[in-house]
Image (cartoon, rainbow, N blue to C red; front, top):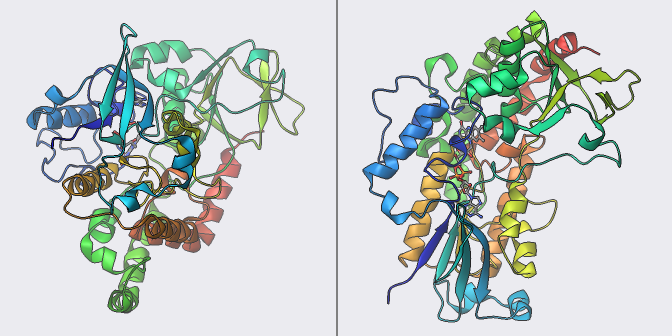
Length: 464
Ligand SMILES: Cc1cc2nc3c(=O)[nH]c(=O)nc-3n(C[C@H](O)[C@H](O)[C@H](O)COP(=O)(O)OP(=O)(O)OC[C@H]3O[C@@H](n4cnc5c(N)ncnc54)[C@H](O)[C@@H]3O)c2cc1C
């Protein structure tokens, strides 16, 4: 019998997701061979290794046209909520549906009811489907705004406070006009913060330097092309997977990983030697040295009438405009889509663990549903494609899911494994599986001298 599958993620009016509204000068951070569909190479007209946002958008749109996908998409449709019909909340708390169904993707017991809203005329429509695939990303739509004590938040401030998302919604000229001649403070030290600070410093120069308030320094991998060798050739292929000890490996594969350990070390040394030469993100610290970007470490800050105040300091920082590059609440977005409180609790899992997804796709206790694109990696197109293929095979019943207990235990093992290798690594990399964990762990251990160099540079460049 024919089954209905709903793929959720078309709230906007065209293909591209986060790439539709990005800070205009943003480029891909991943080299394009690692950000590529396996059956659709980048065109020759894009020679750049790190294409800009327009080229990325073009590439994604061409993919959809090439495979004639547009006809399957209902753009401008925001899903307000999904509800599982066929079981009460009490049943949902105690059941083990995938297991009852012997690991089958579909069930005769229940369906998902999807309530969708047309973003133009706000009319709603309800669909009943057998399986839901959530592809709602984690870097869009719900901004993460820091919390402030009463009367010390943006409401106390006389200038403008916007989120990086609002900034990204402007085109380059409008954004430049908006910041020009203003004393801008950017909060954050991740990719968006750096891109915005670069644009502000270009608009205002040293006359009105852009201040960057940051809580934690980050290692920014300068490029993915050490000594001319693309990093994926070292780390993102089937052979490199063999070099890593991972949960669930048998004796022979573990032995092989041990035998290959010297090679793994050699790869890491090779990469390190390149990072030592190019420690800094391109152009950013030049701007800091020239004085058009001022870096300032701030454990926390609050707003007062005309300025902002850094915790522990008496003199306020003169500011006209604050741009919060403080990320997104991806977890809230995914949680809120479930109408059931039980599923809301399930999807978030415990506060000290990552969202518990078996194979980064399936929540063991939420039936007939897959999540793709929530677990981020350094090469998202590649990993999402693999997960899509895996899910498609599941839907085709090529294989069956293991029991709930097995899925939970597998997800927990991976969570432990990632924590072991990725302590202190940025949130967007926190779910990177396999060899990247090793690479990053190496970066954690080798960086004694490098960390000193970076910190001394940051100290030198930070103003009080
Ligand atoms: C500035 C920036 C730079 C990045 N650079 C890289 C990079 O270099 N390399 C890399 O691998 N990754 C990068 N990423 C990560 C990026 O998120 C992924 O590469 C990829 O674009 C994610 O695609 P996605 O379709 O999973 O999610 P998204 O692109 O976020 O798309 C999700 C879509 O779902 C929609 N949606 C949300 N909620 C609903 C709902 N309730 N109903 C319907 N639709 C909904 C959203 O509006 C959005 O259009 C970057 C992200 C950002 C923000």
